[in-house]
Length: 305
Ligand SMILES: NC(=O)c1ccc[n+]([C@@H]2O[C@H](COP(=O)([O-])OP(=O)(O)OC[C@H]3O[C@@H](n4cnc5c(N)ncnc54)[C@H](O)[C@@H]3O)[C@@H](O)[C@H]2O)c1
Image 1: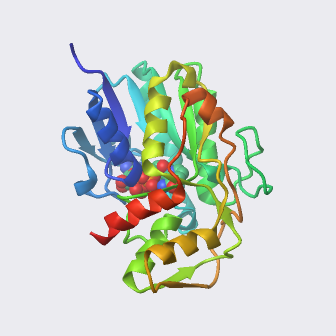
Image 2: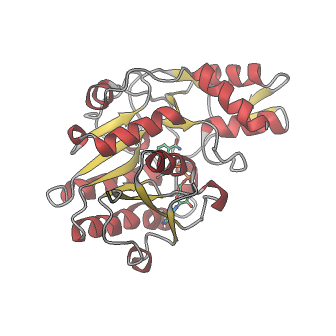
């Protein structure tokens, strides 16, 4: 029997490479796209059909085979901080690329598109678990773009079924330890391992919802394969509120003799946010999540190699 073909974008990046591996392991044929603007060739899993190109360019879309049954769109500029450097570039990378893929999906009667959205769409929120029905008032150009991309998916949902996954802070082995502007956990860990001095941009009272990469991959796999997920917008977090201070305490315990100091702030940063996971659990049936201390230990062991 011929394998079902799926298109996965961002396969040279952190999350996309894991998601692609999972689909390959499950017997799918995977077409992967990445422009290598942030990802690395060595992350691309063996066995997929790789197309190098920028999805904001129609010339890249035209290279994608017409028989992909699902689109999992993870390619994108993934930093709120970087989105302020060049908001037009961010718009191209995160919104124009999504519109191009929506057109591909409609033209080729794709079954479903799963989109990598973000908690950044919510902006400043109350100190309580945030559900998907909460108002969206993004604070960064990145968040505006993610929200706009979701909006386009809703406009076209009659022609292209979709699932939007609003991921919270994803962390784990494979995160880019050289990039100190993307990924709170990897930024702190990279500094702890390199110099023992962690620069914290913003208050340690801020709080987040840290979710381990394996749990995120499982959410993506189920979102793309469970018919009940179609049309849903789901938070992908653990529901656990963790302060930056707690995170730093755990990092400093795992990397002895490391310390931290607070200096400056990151533009468009959310002061605190954690997920209401009711919809995620009921729709995708995820039973439990990796505790932070367990995931962090695995991350540190990997990073020390
Ligand atoms: N990491 C997180 O905590 C998190 C949280 C919420 C949402 N997201 C979203 O999930 C997705 C994956 O994030 P990640 O952490 O793996 O980031 P990443 O930077 O590691 O991976 C993104 C990949 O997309 C590629 N890319 C960027 N623009 C492209 C374009 N126009 N055409 C083709 N390829 C392009 C990059 O080269 C990179 O390999 C992103 O869309 C990000 O915004 C990530």
